[in-house]
Structure formats: C-alpha cells, structure tokens
Length: 190
Image 1 (cartoon, rainbow, N blue to C red):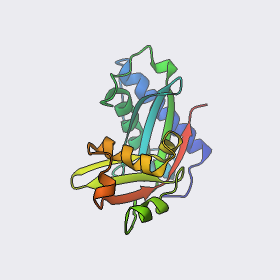
Image 2 (image 1 turned 30 degrees about the horizontal axis):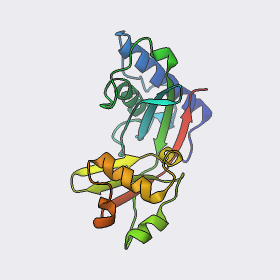
Image 3 (image 1 turned 90 degrees about the vertical axis):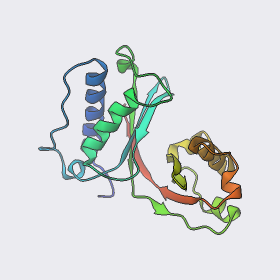
C-alpha cells in the first residue's frame, strides 16, 4: 500500500463506483472490473468504504476494515452494496442514480489503541483524524473519521459508536473494550 493515491487513481475509482451502481440499479449487464491496465495501486489489496449522499444526506454507506481483494474490486463491491444493501435504507432507485454523490474512503490498516482507563482513552482519540473501531466479543462498530464532523465530542462519539454496535451508550465507560484506530484518504465526485 502506497501513502497516497494519484489523482488518476481517484478518478478511476469514482468511475468504477458510478458505473457499477448505474448498471446494477438499472438492471443492465454488469462485469467485475478488469484489473489489466489499471495502476499498481488499484491492483493491490486495499480497503474502502463507499458513501452515497443525495443533497448532502446519507443514502448508503458500506465498506470493510480488512483488505481481502484488489482495491478496484473492493470499491466496486462496496459501491454496489451501498446502493442496494445498506439496511438503513431502501435500495437506490434508477431515478436517484443521477442525484447520487459518491465518496470513497481508502483506509489504512487498523492499529490497536492501548489505554488504561476511560480518561486515557478519551485523551488518545484524535477527532477528525482517526476512524474508530470498537469491539466487544463478536460485536463491533466503526465510524469513519468524517463522522467527527457530526459528533465532535469524544464521549458522545464513543457513546454513539456503542449504540451503533447494539449496546448501551455507556458500555465504553463500564467495560474495557477493544479499540482500534485507522485513517482514511477520502475523495468524492466534483
């Protein structure tokens, strides 16, 4: 994994996402991305989240936290899933496709965040920089760094993350959870 994607790589990934969404939503023939001819960055294993919005309102967001396929295929898969499989929304309709704004977040590998107590945990979180993944046994939830824009308070951020995981909002205060952080390079359509 390189440190940055080129502007050409970003443009190519946005095209891949847009074409995949358009094809599946409109019931058109659809093929996996042909990796031949793509840059090395897009052929290497990578991790992404694809976020769809309409008029700045969330319409779908799906991704992964661990690399298991080439980045170009990862973006294609998550673009389709964001359009059709985000449980919070009905599937995107053909009328909505032209209204969609596509944002891609390319994730770094996760790093375990060691902390001694709640205050120490709060002090180690970097709003606007870190994506946060919490785990409690088989349960887990994550927020991308962009979520800090809506929830800038660190305690509120962790409480909302616990709710997303299906736990009580104060679980992070009562139990030592496994906490991991990561960063993203985000880019979106103009």
